Length: 305
Image 1: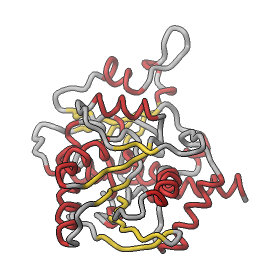
Image 2 (image 1 turned 90 degrees about the vertical axis):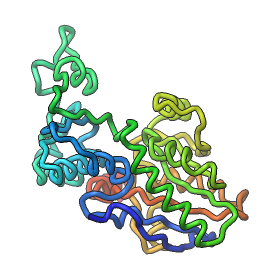
Image 3 (image 1 turned 180 degrees about the horizontal axis):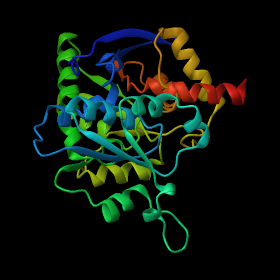
């Protein structure tokens, strides 16, 4: 099963050369940053585990990757979500559709009596798992997006591949770019690359810079990658015409499909970063997640025609 040593290809964007680490070309069911973060789970020995428990959005990349992991390990996946939109239940798409096809048990908390509180509100997924579900010895709990120490071994492998590539190219320095949700991949990459004159830059897609810094600190690391800040305010999950435009431009100029939720914001930041860093060799880490385009693209097309 191929979940390492992805190829590096060379491209241009707006006249600037860059390299692309093609983690989207790893195993069809287990690619992108989730393959790196869950590699420790795939390779590890967990003889007593029969069920893996996760949570997040019904269209999360981690949902599909955990479903694939569970299938490969012969585990059951129980994945908690706040709710499942009726249109998605009636017309399954993207990660939700693919995870269902792999046998994932996707549990909507708003449909569970045990998740409802006296004031009528519904427990968060994390609170429900920790206080009501209370994972047993045969159940493995994976935090949202794979944000845990178990992710480090797979990301360290990615770092080693980048170190070897830099040496093969006889480069004195290198800059590695990737967007961040929880920031787990960027943080562990920085940890294992900083001693090799390889700089990691990222941007905060889910929350602001303080949110991302807090995520870094919760993983126990005090030395962090550089966080780029977009010129225009960005709200996670909101549709922006300039995001869609830059996504189309990337495809046109590179002949590579990128994903629509995280990549456009990182490339908006890089468009501002590139003119001031013309001497830098840039490698962009393709995060995979292309199944998400199956649901994101129709949303953009409905809004912007």
